[in-house]
Length: 195
Image 1 (cartoon, rainbow, N blue to C red):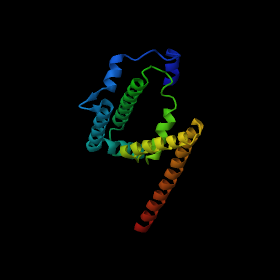
Image 2: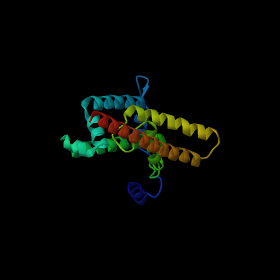
Image 3: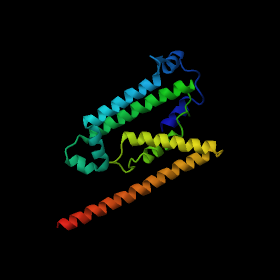
Image 4: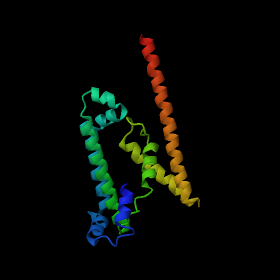
């Protein structure tokens, strides 16, 4: 929906980015690039979120929504916060892309949807919800970038990168389903032994 709206508003690249933003993004503070400073701030933010208990509540809502309601968790508040955080990180990534490409292109974000889902799935996050973490997602993104680079330097086309990402998602879904079924079988067996 938003991609279509972006194309409706701006059918082609929208000129240049203000020089101030490009200067801020490409500057260094005490010899450290601004993008690295942003990354460090984000890592501290992630650490704070993990320590605050929000991540546990988010996993509870993702893993078993009915159980979260029964545990009297503020499910709607947690959902709104997660959408707000997602929007914030998306906007931050968009600003970084705009500063890197120095243009406003309505199509610059297309293709990142599959790539981001693949990276998260590769990092061990369950696509069904309830399991996963920041570190795994970051490592998944790094591994996916390496896979894409290997495919590129092997002389294969972009189609093979998309194929690899699709296969990663299918494999993650299959492995996640098998692990869920295995843990459910194990839990049922343990309940049977207790009775």
